[in-house]
Length: 547
Image (tube, rainbow, N blue to C red; front, side, top):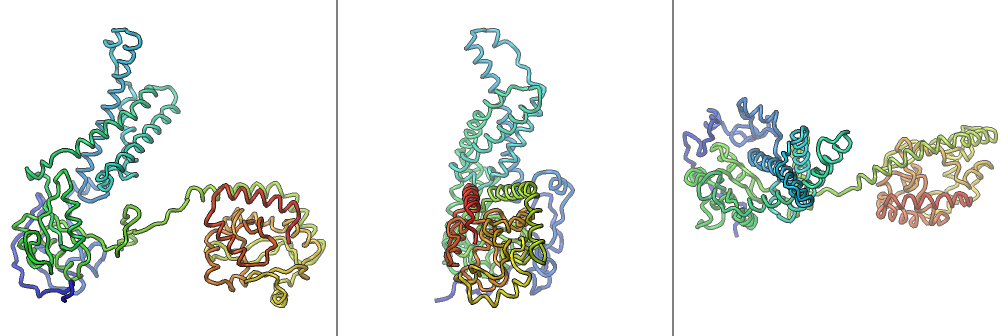
């Protein structure tokens, strides 16, 4: 059986003097019509903008109006949709104005119904001085929030249920922000009741307009105005599924003419092979070509080359390797290289920001209030034994980064040198070293360790962001070098002054037990759980259960 990617011998393609699709006002340059010398790095001698001089593409000549529009006007998420976006935004602006005016009239009718005063119907209702500016702000906020929530994006418009939810969210928050701004701006030049009542009315009006627009008959297909003739390259499962979705467009703005395929038999839907493209784009007045995956690179290059020569729009269905994206696809550029985000894990960014804020504020306040105690401890350490007051050593923190951890010195000066000689007496299982009655500990150090006072200088590490109040304990470098691969996930969060292990299994000698508690803490982390651990830590410290 012949491979579906087999390339047929290319028959000579007839050269035409002009493109099949002429863009009004866009004069084609001579070099875009004439065939250039074949280059192994390019398709037709022109360079793609994102590939530079070693790839395909070339800069387009733009007139002054295009430059001004791109400089001054907001750019839609999809190129070529500026006028469609302008229509949607303009309609929303007009509907906001209409809803605002309708609420004013409804208030007049309500006043007449309550007071039965015919004069209320004849009383003029001057438009407030702040009205136009306020409505402009209202509409701008609505549009910006709509952009943020992808209200005007095709993937939202095509799903009515999602469109209703997004529309309600945007209408609510835009009205809420305007009401708050008016409330805090001093004398009210406009009624807050009118603003509040306009929000649900605007939502209903916009929803009705969108439903009406969706039910409009496909008049563009009958008149030919605004219709885009689409030719799909590839008549496989993906290409036919794409054609089915496009045929369900009730507005009739896309008409699928058929397919080009290298292997499917030519018939009513399959109009020919890739080498027939130059002829078909002329006979069927093709506006847009969509390349579906998988396509052999040579086939794709030939299609793109011919489409560009004929000024046909080209779209590509990316190969996602059989995976369905969980979120809307995001296209971005890293330098000059296009990158498509297939999956992005959701992070509790705001909660982590609150955690960091609580850490910094609490640690700074604790250092300030504990200054007298820290001074007394420093004097005791200095008077009892020779050596520095603080013990500063390298520890392993977030994602394996090393940092200098601060503690009050509780051991003799040569404690690190004696550690390897004492490792045979280690009472902990795994890479972590710990032993009771450690001969390196001083008398003052034993008291400080019992009540965990030796760890107070680590509050400075918390202020610097190297540690957190709650998290897995940081291990020395020699213990870290004995980690297995399964131990590394505990470094996915900043180390902490205290943690779940310290308040539940402090005297458990098993390193695996401590690792399991660290991983459980990370997987089930909440800010409230941090407060619970801190509360239990205070109880443990006051009982003097430190080792």
